[in-house]
Amino acid sequence: MMTEQNIKDLKTIVSEGECFSDKAHLSAYCYDATKERKYPECVVFPHNEEEVSRVLKYCNEHLIPIIPRGAGSGFTGGALAVQGGVILALEKHMNQILEIDMENMVARVQPGVVNMQLQKAVEAVGLFYPPDPASEHYSTLGGNVSENAGGMRAAKYGITKDFVMALRAVLPNGDIIRAGKKTIKDVAGYNVAGILIASEGTLAVITEITLKLLSKPKYKQSAMGVFPSIQSAMNAVYKTMASGISPVAMEFLDNLSIRAVEEKFHKGLPKEAGAILITEVDGNLPEEIDYQICKIEEKFFENGASEFVKANNEQEAADLWFARKNASPSITIYGSKKLNEDITVPRSKLPELLERIAEVSKKYNVVIPCFGHTGDGNVHTNVMVDGSKQEELEKGHKAIEEIFKIAVELGGTLSGEHGIGISKAPFMHLAFSKEEMELFKAVKKAFDPNNILNPGKMAL
Image (cartoon, one colour):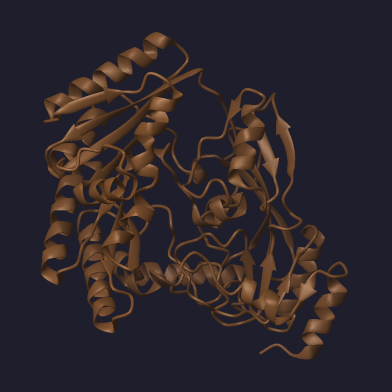
């Protein structure tokens, strides 16, 4: 419990007018995309790394919980103040692109930079930052690193961790560290940057990020395949990926998702299809694009596709992608409460995963639309229930637990991009042994012995 003196002290540590404990600020920072509410006792807007250091040092000495926060767009409660304390809001002031280094093809940014802001800035000079989470228009890069965000382009380019070269961060005691280098090769010392990625703000506060950039591909093309069953679509995914083609994206919608989008937006989607796959390829030569699209078309038809549609311009591409980008809001026709999880399995296990999810749906009599990033085995499962009925919620959570168990049995994991936070913390024992959890706790204690940084997250 913070005291009035704590608030007064913090006001002297940061710039004037950047520390608040009024109801309006506490309410504005008490929730994230989970829509759960956990009220902090104070909200601080640091101007720079030095202020972050002073705030952390003070909170560590007084055992005050501190929660780093970007845009609050996470789906697992990672930015919630579950034990009260201070929200360290980094989006207001620490939001600058510090450098775009054309010679070394890297960018240095502060954690509050919005993902799309960087994408546009580097594309303006012919470069490319591939990670594109669905929240790219508002999520911050600090949050992306802390959750190891993915996106549709992960099938070819990977996820956030694949582009982080170096970090600056502040430890709970106020010490400032640098992890990693701007160099392509660096094998000196432990990979501390790798430990901080996906740590959900539990180990240190990231204050600067150095990201790898690529040359922007000159051409791209999208296409859609229509399949009679979810199994045939999933077979087409891993057969395509095994053929030597590397699509930028390989996204799918099952029949429930297709029907929801069509009911809401009337786009002429094939309502009777078992599934659709939407894909994109890129490259620097038109011939390269043609080869990839033709090979994908071949593999789709070999695996049961009834139709293959190519986009011939940007508008046609946007029309193809509309269904995938609007699947999430559309499936609310099936229930007022969406229990949204993002399990990941090896691509070859996708058919079995979705078959077993269908069995869970029947067992608990709940609707479970599925869509997602099949190019990397990442499926968004959405257990739809009536949020006003407790028995419905309980049934939904039991279904989710079974789905987690299935994913782990198939060699998968609890989350491909959303993280653990508080939502998935109760299920960590399904994916990790007692010994592994003890190791995680030892790492946490080494960085944060007083457990002030984002406590209550990741079952730590």
